[in-house]
Amino acid sequence: MLAREKTEGLVIRQADFSESSRVVTFFTRDFGKISVLAKGAKRLKGAFEAGLDLLTRCQIVFLHKSTNSLDILTEAKLVSRFRANSRDVNVHYAGLYVAELLNSCSEQFDPDPTWYDAAVITLDRLQQGSDYRIEVLRFELLTLQVLGLLPEFEHCQCGQPVGDDQQQWSVWIQQGVLLCPQCRRTESSNRPLTGAVLTLLRDIVETPYDQELTRCLQDTHRKVVRPLVTALISQVLDHRPRMLSYLQL
Ligand SMILES: [Zn+2]
Image (cartoon, rainbow, N blue to C red; front, side, top):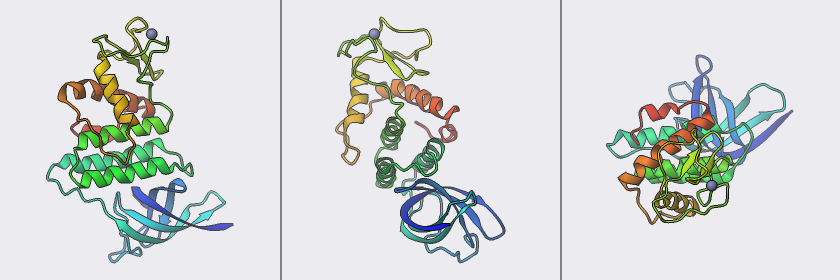
């Protein structure tokens, strides 16, 4: 049985399949991650109008098979390409990191339009010259939220709310929970989090994704937030994300 499906998607991975064909993995708005055979995609002129480079956003039509064999891409119309205009190579790497997170953290045919829209917004903002460090952080936090693995930044498990004092809180990475100084455990993250940092994280998470943040990421906060978020993402992936070896955050 074949079903002809239509959706919009971002190219998040490519692999050669034969002399002329590729297997392209898309993160789509309506079906989540899908891998499709793109016949003729490697030919000089290409069988698909959109090109299918990494992070290309296109309208696609594919034949979904009910058996285990690969789905087949039949149409790909270009919506936009990701072009990091900045001379800063980190902007390009940030785009690739978005693709890596989508590919590593999503399941085939498990759609999440919020996550898709956030990825599109992130790539747009990166191209428009927004601070890549902020954009990466927002997308990482949203990814953790989508997966249900984002810690609460409001109160400890014991109920104590976060105050605006200098108390040193921590996150127990393996459990993804915030702990107050009294509940602190030896295995929780060792960089202390103050009320100011936790309020910043909460503000970022609570700001609707299509709205600009009203706050910036100061270096003092970044130095605490970065190891925490890298540890949380690495815990999800079971390894440190590959792109974080290149991307300077
Ligand atoms: Zn507590």
